Length: 92
Image (cartoon, rainbow, N blue to C red; front, side, top):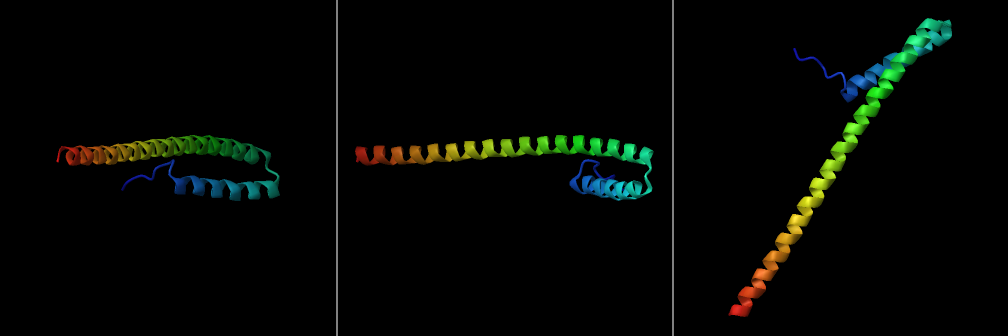
């Protein structure tokens, strides 16, 4: 069976829910060691989320650049087709 991606969105949200539940339990019990462990887990999760958001931002930027390039090629093709029609009509 395939292992789930540790950086998948669903896995990250489940980590956050587990940390949140443990934090509530630790806060009511006053367990300082557990709170420190949870603080470390939260920092780790925050770093993962920052890295993931950076990857998504880069992916969105690449998609935007590809879309702009495709739009520019389409404009050039349209302009070129119009110029060819004018040349053909001028020769007639």
